[in-house]
Image (cartoon, rainbow, N blue to C red; front, top):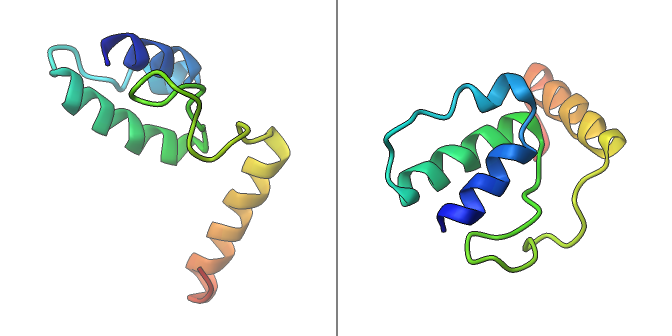
Length: 81
């Protein structure tokens, strides 16, 4: 799990990598990374168990930006998923 966490940290944008606290156990680090990945719209390249990500292909930059726009619209307008 530590190797998977390390790979996930490297996949985060540099400004979010600094937000991963040192000294957490592997499970707590994985939970924290999941939250940061949600903020950044990053899909891990490997799962916690070292296999492929559950969602299939990693998100493209365009898909992430569209998803963020949609979340913003939903927040402001108060509807949708």
